[in-house]
Image (cartoon, rainbow, N blue to C red; front, side, top):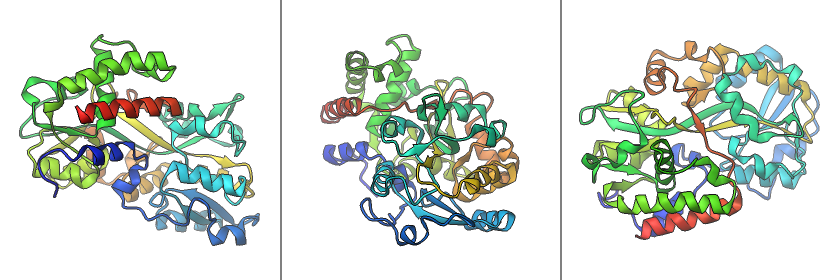
Length: 385
């Protein structure tokens, strides 16, 4: 376990810039490399029946789903795993869009794919959008251009607040990102710098102290106007932070060993503690939980077109969507999936996202390269202060 003190600035900055959350959550092993295609692609890229070739996150397709899909449709899922959105884009660029029928990019990556000519659009007449939660459908809009959709929701997760229920009392619609910075929380909170600063931005926006946080993504001038204020607030309250976290284990240790009371964290580790009966609850704040959503996209070289739509139809059936959520630990986008969660998973989900919390989910906007570069400068300034 790391010491109670905050981790070194260099390590924290590096962690803040990491994009692949699954490397933290699941310890995923990268299959293949960005520059080398997996062997099955060479052998099966142009198979036109009986297969569905997926490039997807390593823990998204349980064996039970593969078996059930093959039994129901006769289609065999062949999977290539990736550990980051960057690797996904590089693999498809190398193959010039061939070798895969579906990939699984995160919703905020649309700008990186828009001008690549690597994605085909969906035939929306073949997709039952009423089977997908409306709150999820809107998150795929970053992949819509030329009036056509290139992204269909699949699985999602969130970053919000978790707290020790034996040391802090709150309720839905009162909990706020601003609670992290109340006087009584000094030296009792944790988070990762990039996310905490974004949380401060949304808190300050809600309090009427800055203009729209999301508008900062539009151009450099707006971004600086917003982040100058955010960073100064963070520096002024730096002593509130008991520790930064890098991964799931850090979050668990923070609450269970390091006397953290309130933290801005991923849903997975806190939900795990909740289900184990530990005194920790994950809850969406009134500003709305930060949300990422991984969807399905069709590469231009896809060959098994009918299999694509069979897969989308199959995985959006409530019982199958519930199975995936139960076995992967991620949240389903399908209407009715909640009715097929295990009792403990259903209890944890309802506890975290009560009432209208799903309607308030806040998706990370598409991040231009200029924005990321400027943000990293603000992170350095905060961490080194």
